[in-house]
Length: 144
Ligand SMILES: [Zn+2]
Image (cartoon, rainbow, N blue to C red; front, side, top):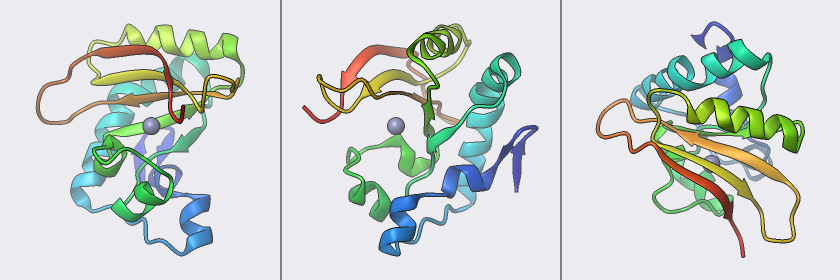
């Protein structure tokens, strides 16, 4: 199922962990509508500007979120959030600045595994309903 011009639902559902552990990661219609909203308002504009981008984590079922150690209130479980792989720190900064300039988003976070890690990614979320906070967190260590 196509979510926007360049994004397909499969990119948001695919998970190595889910496959390896036999976890069901099927979104419902609300989740899919949220993912479509995320694509149309955040990811497609980013893609239009920078070319192909890689989603490292999109939708997570409750079981999958638990398996990957996600936060109990993670927006990944609503289809409201995704993680974007960054090809280089320099490119990541450009992505981040661009995303920050978008009119509507909920959270934008530059994440890494721990303070020693140089493996970074960008987490971005948007809500189809409710208040979008436009909260920007420049650096968050996930597992300290
Ligand atoms: Zn995330």
